Length: 285
Image (cartoon, rainbow, N blue to C red; front, side, top):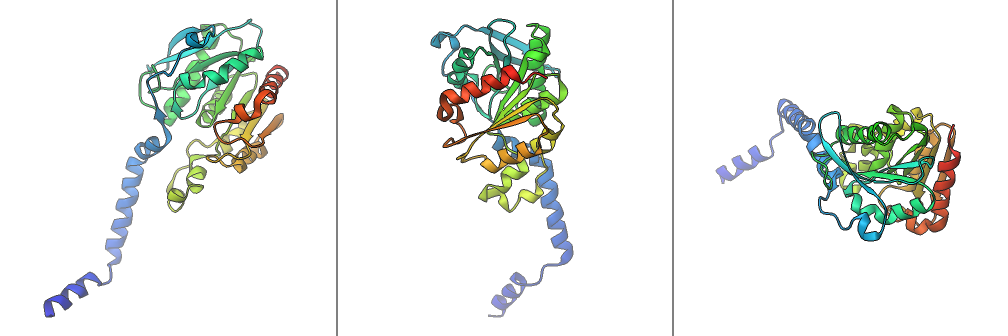
């Protein structure tokens, strides 16, 4: 009985403040040490296998390989039309690879928009491992390839970023000269995304504000088209509205009624692609 009481006293004895502080410091240090790995685990879902190729769906294209400033070899598909047509620099979302976006590309070509789509490092045939800084470098390398190798005038290039790709498109618009920019289904920041997910809500205050689209969009001077599905189940519609409110003129907001996160171009249908085309052709400053 005495041993049992002693055990209970030890079990429920007050925790010393020094031990509590040490525990908090240890947890915080571990969090910041491994945060980038944790973040990447939850952000990137690359696939290397292709579902199909443009050749299989009768689209005229060129296979393209180019390098980033830190030596990664990236792969993309270039769908050229007449050289004076605007060009969509397509920055895709966080999952799959370029082969999963072919159904989105054909209607853009039908609207007289050239397209260049590429895979980030670690996706498809691109080398390396994805990270925030890495995908920014990849976007800039894709832009530089178009200007230096394909001789596309900067005033014809329109970065188009879907979901995670919106952060890449914004980075390109901040670091390079572009005609305009289109972002779709974009989040404000990773911190805000964590806050909107029940599993991570309690710990969101610990997260750094990575992929801070809300702050960056205010520095983009070029014309902006922001597209968001009103029923987006992953990135809330309010985030798209916040990005639009933070952006400077000239800016345009296209809410797609009934659309979720990944089906804006399907639900939006003809009006969606006509809106993108009208913006692309009339947004030049």
